[in-house]
Length: 128
Image 1: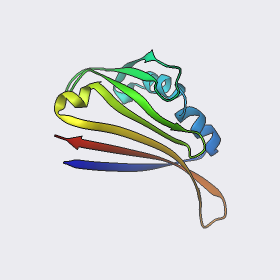
Image 2: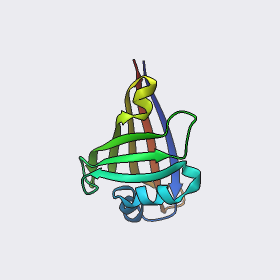
Image 3: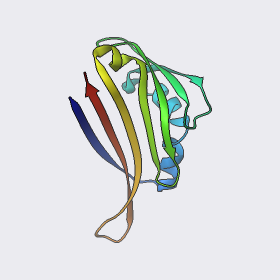
């Protein structure tokens, strides 16, 4: 069984600023500092923030799991696209064979003549 879930968030900053956060390890630091994220700690296991980087995410606690590792599989600065995939623990231990998160920073014009920027978060998952 395959599923997909998307959410878009409109932001009031230039796309270059939003992408600067989402395309680097700064996002991991920000998530780690935000108690509402549920993420207690983010460790860089391998890499420098580019494609191939592996992160270990430690969560504040149950209900589902406390840790998983994810790998940055795609980082496209032209399309402002970032994909990470869970490679160990977490959702894989719950029976998923794929848990992939895609972030996109999208430029969008509106009726008032100025440009908006959207952060699109898409989750792809597959259950065995």
